[in-house]
Length: 262
Image 1 (tube, helix red, strand yellow):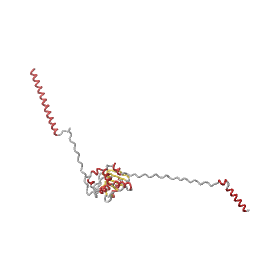
Image 2 (cartoon, one colour):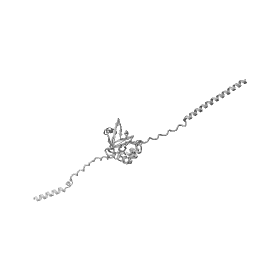
Image 3 (tube, helix red, strand yellow):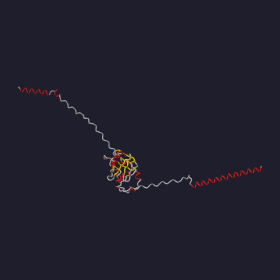
Image 4 (tube, one colour):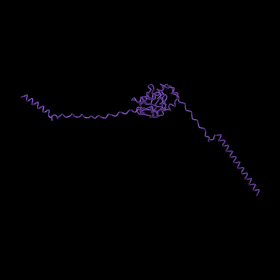
């Protein structure tokens, strides 16, 4: 009897499982994964702006002599690398063409390649300095240049005018050509001359020959012409007086003749 009951129960379960209603009843589908919105990727940072020192010096100034020396010795590349690849920046003192012209040409042509390179490096600091910073920098004199020790400069602030002193020259900064971190370029009216390169004050260039004076105007009478003119004037006056006397004499003679005839 129990066996029959078990068989009956198994049949009932089988029938229920095969029922269409139960077959259609399924578990609910799994929810779709939520869409994750990612923030937009940031725009790439703009490339840093670099000042082309060669281009700057070629259009400003005139600084052609100094620029030619920089390019000849490749010091321009040293300054450019300092400006582009370091956090310190660079400060350059640039003499005008007239500053080089004021010194005898052999002063620079007789320098060795290393001396010329050192002289150019002597015209720069391996750090950016604004004009406002020179006042405080003067308290640290002497200041090391790009040429290293012992090539130093002394800075003085005289009521707002900045003077850069080397052994044989003390020019004033005449103008600020460019002064935006990391590059500062200041114009000088004289070349900086260190004692380590020039044992004595270099001679000045000979003064240019004075321009010839223009000749005296052909219209302006000279002393001889004045005397001749005076003599001519006197002769003219005498001739005129003589002519008047002759005319008067003839007139009197004619009058006398008429009276006799009358």
